Amino acid sequence: MIAHYRRIKLVHISTDYVFDGSSSIPYTEDQKAYPLSVYGASKRQGEQAIENIMDHNALIIRTSWMYSEYGKNFVKTILELGLKKSQIDVIDDQIGTPTYALDLAHVIIIIIQSQYFRQASFITQLYHYANQESCSWHEFAQTIFQMANINCEAIPITTSQYRLPASRPVYSVLNTDKIKKDFNLEIPKWKISLKKCIDRLR
Image (cartoon, rainbow, N blue to C red; front, top):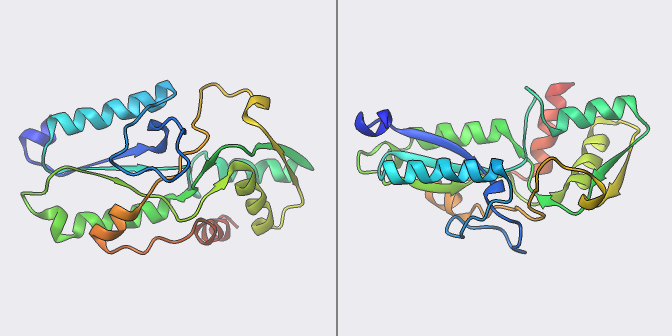
């Protein structure tokens, strides 16, 4: 509300979990959201609140499977487990795209510095941003072990074999064509960005 009344530019980060995973091709921004969890529903409600209040000056970016050198995330957890165990179970039937937080941060800086976003007439936009290509959590974990030279085996299991506190989409790959076109971006593949993060963690 304050951003709206004072005409302040707003950037809001949302999630791929607003989708139910029933698609077999990457989700575009104009596809209807059907969240499976309270988390996904609350993030969609946040998007809608911004869209309803701010018809101008807001930027909503959905991203997926975020990780970095900081805080708690999948990459750091897998590295820690790999140093303690000889094998771990990892879900193999959920498909998405790991996204390096540093890449997203760089893109946000590019966007907020662009003339397109800075213009007073900028209409509120929804974009998808994730690193390129997709994988399962199992392939993600295997790649982490390989890049970090950790001798731990990732055992593939199904979602039904692993008790999750909330439902997750089995497929949540995001189509990033819109953000690439509007801001002339080249988005790196997830394995390239993962290598950078692991090198920094070392």
